[in-house]
Length: 475
Image (cartoon, rainbow, N blue to C red; front, side):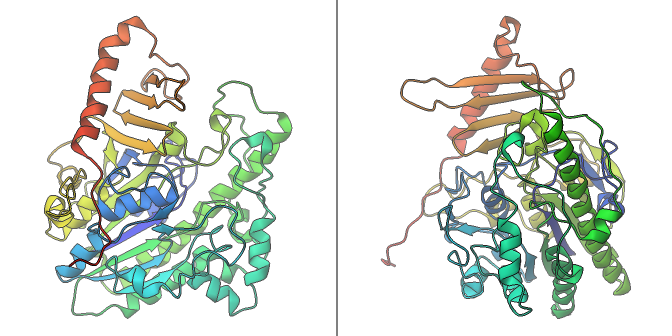
């Protein structure tokens, strides 16, 4: 089977229409849910680089030294792309990878990574073909294929100014300057439209005598919230005051601005959906749709004002749960899975489709602990053999929290922040309290449940130590 893995950036699970609670129409993305739509796929770390490197390796971010958006994924870690290539697949990637960020925040424009110059090194993660977009904001410090595309049209400096003028990534709505103004340049140059073009070019460039794997990674709906005007016009305004309020409510002025941001966010998803439609039509034109497994997900969600927060890296469902779907042409059941799964279970699923076992393909005997591979294939769910593969899914973020998410219960541990502090906990009943507004950790009757969840978290860390790496040329 051929495999196409489609990904968005900072996409909330309630912003697809393959789930009934969806707040935006995504008719093309919905087709990817032809086998199973997953309503509780947990990002193992709701920040870009950690989530994406976890997907590449099938391991938790504490195992691969990628807890934060800082540093580079060590090349010693086995990747699913290398495993696919070694078993005969042609492997291509178009769009945002973000496996490397070895420059500090505040780096001036153009002084980050030259990803074009680093192309061959990045392809060593397991790629035959690569066209890279650093990301909407990351094209400011970095020089990528998309930056080169803009540069060739005399637009790079203006684009970087456009991004910078939208303000920094502050997480409190009252402090942000974000708006929902449309893209100020020709729509043909909008990053996700260009990624759509390049995805079709990659599909055309593939060798026709081998199975192919294509990773298509869009940059929306990540901020800045700047959809093409045609996409913004296609999404009607909506000023429902349905923010999840936790603490002090937002001012009316901030809500007014966030209504505009929400509309732009939905419009960016509409833009991605149009590009997914182009890709699906090309597969149909080449009679490849019934020979190709399609997967869809995102790296993390977006708070959009809920709990008085913006952006990602938060312990609530809006940041942690990502929209996820699979279309396997041999198993078009149109099912829905509400059981918890982890983002990296897609890694094991991709390998399973290729006839490989993640426990073997992503492991090696030396250095130590590379053999601890926690991802699990979703194919038993796709085939209808089981309704779930986990009792709880795990997520962690920087040193801010670790969480276990089940169908009903969610446990969060907030580690100590200083020698004088102690760890704290939260426990939510997701059935009676889906918005996570009542912390039950202090309730005496919950003490046995807390003890069980603590033990589960401790066992998980016991069984998944950091993999060892080396650099010295002793070999």
